[in-house]
Image (cartoon, rainbow, N blue to C red):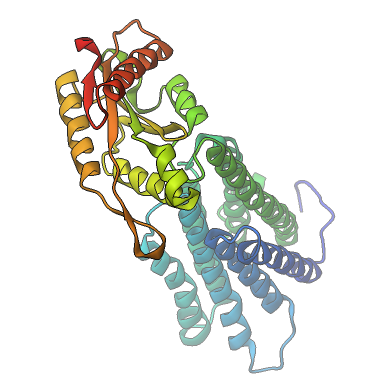
Length: 392
């Protein structure tokens, strides 16, 4: 036959080897998903690899006459369910919505291939091509799922996985196009040639996909640890470092600084709470106060614990007058709070707030200084009040 010659491989042996490798990869991801990473996405991916391994085992084993239907059904249905689990993993990892209709469609293809082309009108070629059609749909859906990374830190891994999926999709279509002989005559090769190229490509694709899944999990873990370094461990609010990082990175429309109003907040006589009731009680006061502040959060505000009993709210969506009203609302709600501590005891406390509207050319450090001056004046005037910096 004319065309490029290539040393073919033992397809059955390669299928068995690929099955072992994929089951091992699935076991590794399952261990990580139920162990250190404790993540559902890793478990979905693990099931995908395990079922693909099972499908390859079903393809490579010899069965007694009359058992071919069960072997073929296991082979095709395992492929379909494996695709479903892979998609579920990427949707869960990327916090994307699940598309039940697509999952059903991916299972319809192998089901039709068995019922139509194995039971009703036996035809091995049509059976293989029908299931292959479902795999094309799956690869296109996977390509789409990889188009929207959850975080910018994961964008490079997502992009490279998309390249791999596209290359594999091209080889996949080319291989099955050779099976139904729709390629141009000059591009046609022997069936063994197509099978060899496809087998090697499938092995490499699954290995790269497994490495990609592991890379995504550890990259997301690193990003989560980075986030924790910017969060106060007790309250869950931004810490001082996290606040300045958010300002510098331009998060939450901070570019519009002429609208930024700062609320510098301090819990009155907090040292007395720690001294009289203990540090555990003080921590409980901080946590419940932080929970109250979180109810005022939105995507145009930054709320941070700047240290000790000092908090800061940066508002990019309110005028000075509106911010003053919000500060008074927070003060009044705190005055009505009762925090339960040990021995069925409750603590009531108050706060003082300094309000300052930044000018467009001011740096954040200058704005904080003005807000602090207003806060200190509220303290000197008797606490439990709101002071506007422009009135000083």
